[in-house]
Length: 124
Image (tube, rainbow, N blue to C red; front, side):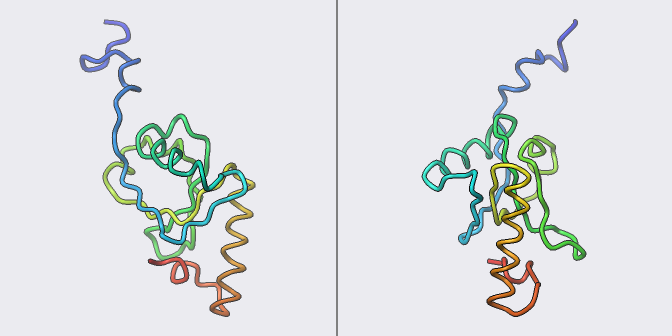
């Protein structure tokens, strides 16, 4: 019985490919650690096997008090991301890259709108 969870072996749990509900913005921001030509492969990995990717996603939050959420891709294995669509506005290679990407988005928003309403700036 050791190593068996509800009839599945532990190693079989990681083979199950579940499609996540990620919606990528048409004006997606990519960090320095993510190359545009390899993004299609990365996107497929994020949708099926997020534990194998080590990137940060910049997403629009569902609550009204936040502007942008930084989500490590490893959190995509949680059930929440399989049930509710997540709107991705940026992909960064690591945490520092994600923070610099937020700064870039903020600079673009201030230059275009003259305010810092990032949610309205990034909506599609």
